[in-house]
Image 1 (cartoon, rainbow, N blue to C red):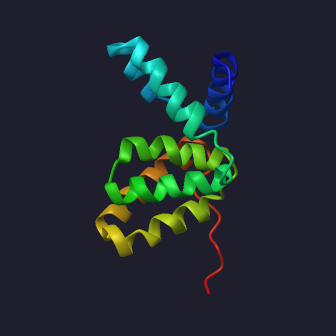
Image 2: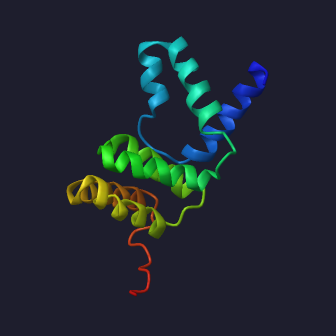
Length: 135
């Protein structure tokens, strides 16, 4: 892939995932310290890793939400909850993935992640979510 193609793919993936995200994005933070490294990280993370078509974007984002939930990385989780919703994951599916992480990270990390999900849904004007039927 040419450098121009990689830059285009990076921009397309960033728009797909992070359109409408408010606040500072990691790229802006990286640029504040080293613009060259920011470019390299962005081209790799967004342009090469997140743009891969090996698994669908919704699956990739749910995996990311799960990992960030267990690690209790709430700032990064907020960004990827937006991304999950942007690529078509229903809020109920994002919540279900977060609940599943109680098995691996404990209830406190689930509570932290659900607060992030609620915050994102409020920002997007999607709160309260439609409740799934109890089974």
